[in-house]
Length: 100
Image 1 (cartoon, rainbow, N blue to C red):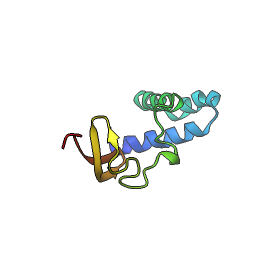
Image 2: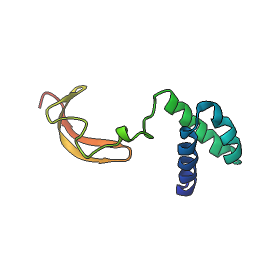
Image 3: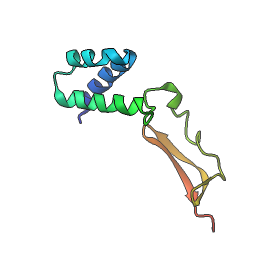
């Protein structure tokens, strides 16, 4: 997907999520002449409604590296040593196995 296509998906998605669910189909009929655009938007709406994605809510934004896990905290079999960075897709941490 090109950056331009992704921008169009986001634009249509944001507007669709602002509507009552019963009004979304008619809105998508008007805005999505391209079937692949419509499928992508409908997929993201379904994920949003099922709670699988919170990327559209401000509360899901990351405030900075390390905002989710604390130094010394265990994650699975690993001990978190500290944050390495954060971006649009998540956070990256330095970690070690517990025996070191």
